[in-house]
Image (cartoon, rainbow over all chains, first blue to last red; front, side):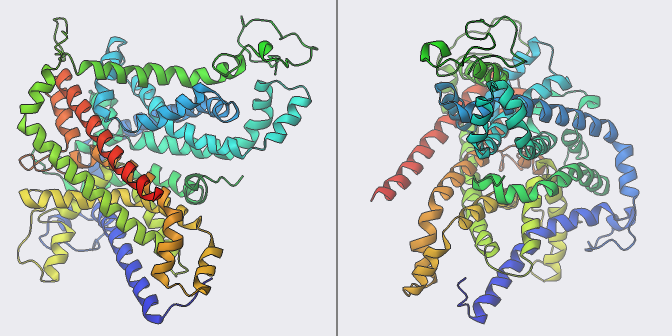
Length: 279
Length: 323
């Protein structure tokens, strides 16, 4: 290590780190604090950092004002189905893209990059028309289909990294023992991919749980809407909002994603994004 | 390899499939199409079909809609109108205002995101105490739904009950409450701050990964040769980091230009269109006024501009590299 730091430089670094911590943390603290304030405190003129008398009134009010349970269930169904389906089709495809040198694989890789560039509006209008002709607008199955396709680029990209980490020699050994491709994939590659599959499923789940635009366009009736769409109903037409319930509902909508991200953290930081998967 | 595994779809040709035979060795026996044998196609199709049907297909359909007068809920047949939509767009000053706002937003968010994320990544790469705390906090915005980020900052910016005004008043920086999201000149900067906050973590993580791939030995060698901190950054770190930087700034720019949810929740495009990003404009055109064809034309213009800007950006950078 190079440790030729003057104490001044150290102090400067800590000061900078402190600034970052404040910038990153203060909106989060404020959200939590607002959610736990009592209605009286929310109404007072002087905003204070911490609730004097922490209360759950805002949470109760949030459940009363909007169909939160229903929308949470919708989000759960949509996100789990989308995550499971997209990973189920992405695993074999990622395997082929890594192990075969083929035009199709390269075209798919190109597509993954290009599809990132198009504004959603160019995709959503035709998708809306197509889904409408199959009566899949305003239905959870339609949204699941959209999310599967929307998750695929990232799932394919992430899984390819994991497939590459599986030693080809293992597969050759299996082939010598008489396994076909499919058998090799099922009994040799798949077990080794489990950590990667789990990570990809969680990531796809979070992506689908958090998604807003497609859900906003495709789901019209309140009993079908997902949590991120329902949240916007707390904000009135004139932008006036009941702050306590809004904060409480927002906090609840974040918890599943935060939980999964906490589990994923290490993988995201060390493995996937550096392109070097440690198996 | 031959097709002897269970799970092969029925009805596939039995050419080399019978058990006991040696696996096919000649190219002809593999029966490949586009470099893939039958197993590979079988594995690839479940992903390829949805991509073709629900992503590539709709996209082409969407591109073609830009040249029609398609509207929602109309019973008449949609007609091909050539470049009429683009001729209208050229004269639509509201769209160009929105387009300018979109560019200002995308460029400032991308640049600030990058500068702040690089700073944080360099700090996190040092051996500092509380690094774990910053690392964890830096990931939280990434996990949050954009709607929640928008809601959260609405609470922060709130005129009467927001913490920002309360803090600034305590510090005697302002004398009366500012309505951050409703002032014509303040709304866009306020929204840009939120964009930076929301997008910084991803950039930080990517840059941190890039920094950790910089070989330490090179740093030590440069230090032994008497290179100062800046010199080492310029000569060792930057060249190694550059490809990562190019990739993430290009992607960030695209994502930011196409962003929607954050601003939709924060201001809905107001006040008076001051924060109406092109995506919000196109959304309203398509799903509030039902002008599908016109909105698709807007989308097409957006793609074209992004493509041109990115080509110029990437080509300049790559040229620098050649020198």
